Image (cartoon, rainbow, N blue to C red; front, side):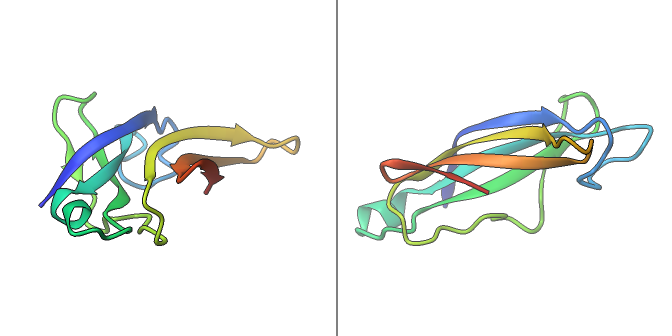
Length: 108
């Protein structure tokens, strides 16, 4: 059984995730799943990233059925997702996830 660790949440105002509607855009939380049994066994892939979303201003949350959205790549410390929306010079937008990955930071 996995526990939830650190993460971040974003308000998806334009519903780019498709997890809400135009009338009820979602709040999307990105978090680290931590498998305690996997850690105790000495595995390196005991952390992965999942999401949950709310369409009622954070009162209730639904775990995304496709979790984990970012499986572990064989890295012992693979945690602390921070999601931000980037706006490029041409006005297009995209979501960017920053993760602690071992002793570095990775971007997805």
